[in-house]
Length: 216
Image 1 (cartoon, helix red, strand yellow):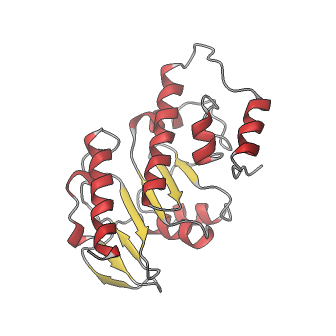
Image 2 (cartoon, helix red, strand yellow):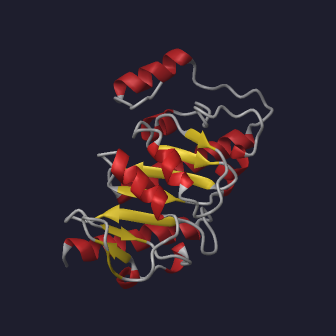
């Protein structure tokens, strides 16, 4: 089994796992990963994470030209913006996960640091998450907004829409976006309870120990 066949199957397995656990529903969400030759495999438009077909993933070459498979997601500008601005990006995942969307609706959210600092793991896997404004689905302006961050963030939250996370590979990207949703869930569960976050010194220690990219 060659590397691309393995990657196609891994994309579909991870996507189905997220779908089965309710992290994105219906035909929402999209996922992409770099191939060994520098191309991309991308989930097709209008498909469900629960029923992706490895053989029908959209395939692009290293120059970004469509090669084969079904028509790609309309959110390609989001994906390409991360790949073009973050040299470490090997995969990008976008979900319509419930708790992170709910948190984005709250009026007192810090747009530069969307997630509360409740656990070390969201800090380690995501750094600071930028909350972007609402865009119409498929709007190329989403990609422009990500490019405007100059590769300094591995994760953004689209207000009223869902998170987008880039990782070094497909497994890392999926783990990170699940951490984002879990942290948002904690935030919504404890909202109004004066929950104890990690203090500034603890956050700084985590950043230093684990060499976290922390745009200021």
